[in-house]
Structures are given as structure tokens and as C-alpha cells.
Image 1 (cartoon, rainbow, N blue to C red):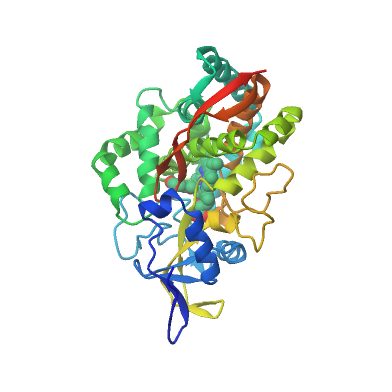
Image 2 (cartoon, rainbow, N blue to C red; image 1 turned 90 degrees about the horizontal axis):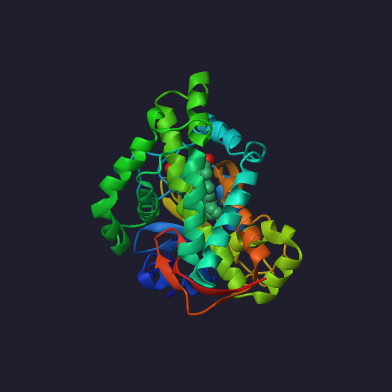
Length: 403
Ligand code: HEM
Ligand code: OVM
């Protein structure tokens, strides 16, 4: 990174592109340079600001009055350009509009409501592990577990039909690419997004949704008047947007961490109650959602630098989660660590409302695996899947030995 000081604001500036193929494939060296450069750095190429230190990112996420979401949490400024889809009523909204959709979803996806889901998901996880190991003890952990498990349980939990579920992953993949600039990844997804998007939007209608699931509960909230009839389908869309690719890549992250830390896998097998901390430690370490933007609502001074009003600023969640100013030996996957306070689910009023769902999925799967499989190891180098927002694996060839 060439750090140049531009008078009079003396803001550290870089011409590096965080959305280039090289940085997306291996973001840690860039994130280190970003944190070292200063509290706030200007990304010259895009004319946007960036922050990568733990304290700075955390404080900015908590300051929703100063750093708003309703101008979009991608690089596009919704006040200047039309967004590619109608904005999310949660992610891309500020109080007071954010309040009602948020409290509706927080209740539906809360730990109390999810308790009824747990026995079924645990049984589904055990069935999947049995199926996979019955086919052989060598498998691609991405296809066999990270993709297969969320796709088996989550769309059922929302209450959408079986037909067409293959649209979910590519829809999410493009959505998360579209938070970044219009680079090679966005160009690659753009030709197909119309069909994926049309299918997803259709599933949000009341008559596509079966009774008893999250989707039904959202429509029931509309019946009670907690949401309007116009809001309900968009809130369902949030589940289908945010709830699939994220958990796929989170499960990929936790399996990769264990496959490369056999001592930690042995520990988990001795004490399966560590599955929960393992999940949060993997989210801290890998941050499946790497970045989100905010927009300044007024001039903000940070670390001796003035950011003008109405500027986009990129928050590096993954970088904050591995900032040595806050974490001891941050790049180590360590079940003895307390990972709480990580920003892998964000922080403040937008903090992931689906995190209990994600945690229950991952804990169910990891617990089932630990019961049947004594050791897991990579049989070849895993291959990254590139996305402008997500940190992901395309393939992860693995071998397990049965317990
Ligand atoms: C918000 C990450 C799983 C639904 C967020 C945010 C992050 C995040 C970082 C904050 C966005 C911001 O501050 O602008 C993740 C990760 C997941 C995951 C890493 C998997 C491990 C899920 C699941 C669902 C979900 C399973 C749905 C069931 C949402 C929604 C929001 C959100 C609707 C917006 C909340 C709001 O703006 O109030 N997520 N998420 N997420 N997440 Fe998740
Ligand atoms: C939404 C949404 C979409 C993508 C991500 C997200 C991580 C939320 O449509 O509300 O949170």
C-alpha cells in the first residue's frame, strides 16, 4: 500500500482495490496494511472511505445516527442511483422504519421460538452425516455438508415449496456481489439474476408459503397489524436473501477450521458442548460476511481525519475480528478463547437477526459429525469461491475416519 498524505486533511490514502481478484482470494495482507495505515483510509479508486480496526468498526456500527444504512449498505448510494432491487426493509433501513420489521423478525427467529426446531434439525443432521459416510469416507465438505445441510433444513423452515430451490444460492451469491463495485463478479452474475430474482420474489407471496414456518409467522404478523400487507413479502425476501449463502459459508468455515486444527477437533469430541463456541470462533476467524458499507449523515471526525457528510464508508468486519489491537494471537482457531464481541454478525441495531438460526444449524451439524467421525483432514488444497462480500469455499476435499 502506498500511503500518501493529502493535505489538508492528512488522510491515509491507498490505490489498492479490496475487490480485486488477488485481494478477495487472500484478504489478510491487505487488511493488515489497512489497519496499519490508520483509523480511516481513503480508497482512492472508488472515492470511498474504509475502516479495519476493531474499535473503530465497532463504534461506527453502534453509531447508526452518524452512519446510516438507508442509503444502501453496498457501494451504490441509493440517493443518487436506483438500487438493483427494492431495498430491504431491515438491512437497508434506519429507525423508525427499521423498528417494526426488526421486532417482528427478532421474535420469530429468537432462541425461544427456535427451540421447537432443534430436535428436527438434530435428527436431520444425523441423517445427513449417516448418508454421506455410507457413500464413503472421502467427500467434498462444501457439497456434502456446507451446502446440503442448510438447503435441507432452511427452506422447509421458511415454508417455501421444494421446486426451484436451486435458485437460492445463485440469488444470494449475486446479491452479495452486488454490494461491491460492478467488477468481473457482478458481470458474471448479472445475465441470470432476472430469473433467480423472479423466483425468489414469487415465493414470498402468501399463497406460496406453507403453514407453521417463519414465512407463515411473518404473514401472521401482517394479519395482526404488526406489519403492513406490503411489507410482509419483503420481510420474507430478507430471509431468503440473507439466510442461505451465509450459513453455507459459515459451515464451510467451521469445517475448514477443524480439518486444519486436529487438536481442536479432538477437544470437541471430548466435550461436544464446545460446538457453540467453535461456531462463533469460526465466524470470528473467517467472517463469512466480510464487509458492509455505511453512509455518513453528517461530517464525522475520526482519528484526526474529517469524513464529509454523505460519504460511503466500508467496514471490514473480518479485519476487525483479527485486529491484534483487540485479539490475542488473532489468526489462531482456539476453542479456549472467548470470541464474544466479534463483529462477524455486525453490532448494534442491525446485528444479525438470524444468528440463532445460523448457530442452531451449525451446532446441529457439527455435533452430529463429531459423534460419527473421529478425525477429519483435507485430502487436497481447498479452493476459494470469490465473492465481493462473502468469504467462501468452492470445494474442500476431505477424508474422515469413523468413530
Ligand atoms: C444482518 C451476518 C445468517 C438474516 C446481518 C449482518 C451481518 C450478518 C454481518 C449485519 C448487517 C449490517 O450491519 O448492515 C450473517 C452471518 C450469518 C448470517 C455471518 C451466518 C453465519 C443469517 C440467517 C438469517 C439472517 C440464517 C435469516 C434467517 C439477516 C437479516 C439481517 C442480517 C434479515 C438484517 C438485520 C437488520 O438490518 O436489522 N447478518 N448472517 N442472517 N441477517 Fe445475518
Ligand atoms: C435482506 C438482507 C440481504 C442480504 C444480507 C442481509 C446479512 C440482509 O434482504 O434483508 O444481511
